[in-house]
Length: 193
Image (cartoon, rainbow, N blue to C red):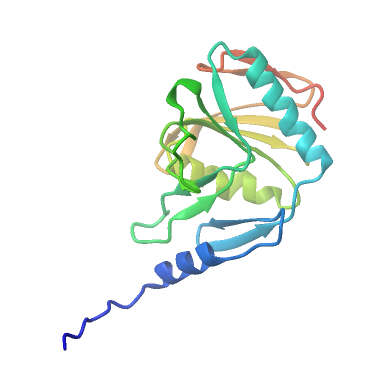
């Protein structure tokens, strides 16, 4: 009888396995952000109001066809070489329509081909401002749009390099924010709440 030696699981493997087996209540979402499991309740009305305003402007004003997914799971590289890979669910994930990125995507797809992610802050805004920003930069997502309801500003982060974004443009609510190619239009923030 042959005996097979099993390699012991690392703490990172155990965390990822436990996360993937997690069953959250209906409507809740679970994310694995820099080694921490975060469970959030369904978003409230003001949050969804802002995402709806962004979706309508993206589809109406962009010169290219975009595919917009709400709450698509992304597998994000770890901040450490051998650390636990992240699992984030942006409020919006945007890709070029010609790529058909979501057609064959798994639950936790690679961020390759994603041109922008959007987060609208809720109860733990600091996580969106700091931790998620660095996660999306590590994943080399070209643009991260943050609608900060607490500070009433909209920020576009771009030029991801070395685990963070190196270009930032922000406007207060009510001002237009110029979105670069491939979007190439001014985002109207006057109706954000």
